[in-house]
Length: 262
View (cartoon, rainbow, N blue to C red):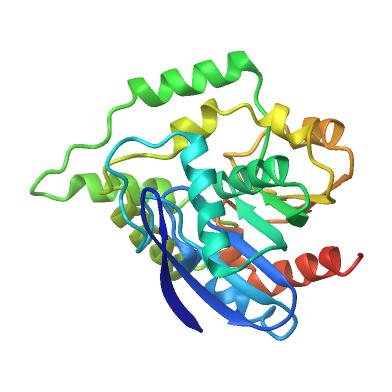
């Protein structure tokens, strides 16, 4: 695995690369990093050149100097792909990373051969308004000497896997998330405010909508099947919000089968 940095107009972007073959670009979810795909890449590198790019304010990529908008996340990933010479690629993203994949394909349709949009759903304007208000009204736990805030957050994360998810795996996810939450900006809100349906209607490449059956953050994928012309859906049974940590080999097989169809 090779690691490196490329420049964008909002700072240096960190990436890693492994394998050989057609390009497959991976974009992690908000408040995670490219660590999310490390295990899955091992099952794809014999057939694909796998690139994992950490977007603004995540992992070892620079923090932006102002709060980014969705357009900033998309533009800087495109700039990273340009710098890396990735002219054409299949793209896979989870949660917010899936939205960025969709936006890139909507803007540059000749560049993206396939999209795997995992954990990417649809909410009505009313549902979005309510969710954004809830996020604004919900205070983050106060950091106290007794560490109670860590216990409160762990109690949330311990429930986000599947029935067979080892707590050691959720601990790995939890530690990545706690570090990412120290960043100056949270990507969730600008991505939630972005007009996903408008971008989805512009897609011309095949799209695989994927969802962990127990992922409580995902709603309305069925609606996107109606909006995206060439789309299908797969639900990974008994898996939660962190499916690429939980079932990397199983998901790699699903991804390879989808990309191999043409």
